[in-house]
Length: 131
Image (cartoon, rainbow, N blue to C red; front, side):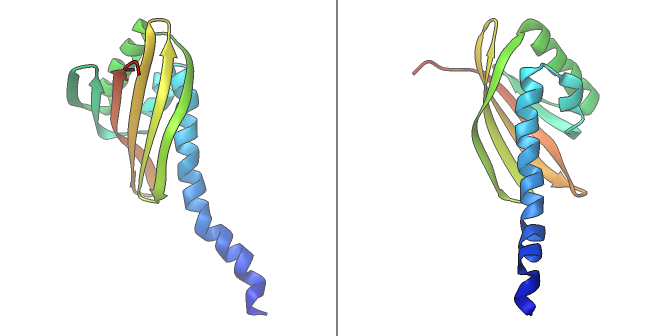
């Protein structure tokens, strides 16, 4: 009789991990569509942005403008999730390959749970290095 509720308990335990993993997949779609506004919705109040050799901490609004400018200069064709770390429910990390008109970029995104919402704390965009 006690085992009757085990599948439900298991599902409730795994649900936060599935929801957090969806954010990582969602960001891949948003990168592909150059949707800076929707990506900015995931930004924390302050975000560390690194594009090429320039790195700084910005407010949510400033970070959105910087990402908008990047997408205007580099129109995306595709985005592919390369690597994901979502084993910790409070911390996620995703690495993407973003293919644009001007080349390929490696995008890494660090997310942290704040007030039960996953927020982007760091976004790095680097030119993809040839093998």
